[in-house]
Image (tube, rainbow, N blue to C red; front, side, top):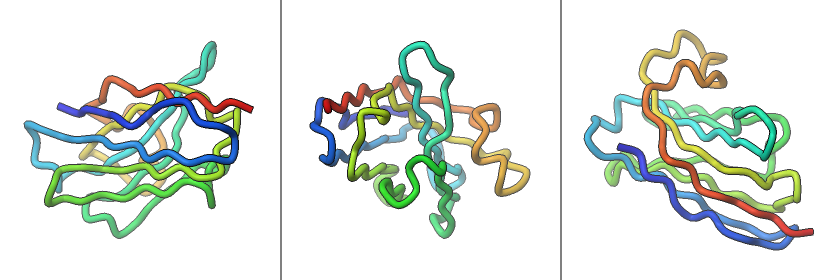
Length: 125
């Protein structure tokens, strides 16, 4: 129900835009998040956006470089990634949830019900 795309190989300092297309769910009822998992590491929070898109949250490691946005009319959430660094190399996953209990819960994977398949981002130094 979530299809992530847009990953690839990019040089350090470059940019990519990830997309996540949703189907089979009422998109505007779900908050959306992006997580990433580097080889040998746990999946970690990257960014999130509320249902209507009025509020966004970012991990400290990407704040100022990444931008999350959504277009409810097309059931799509985006992650614009600028000034990419080798440490950003990971598989990126989009996720959707509707049971967040407060703003902080957007950062935790357990509050997301649906997950995309992941898209690989590789940053060469």
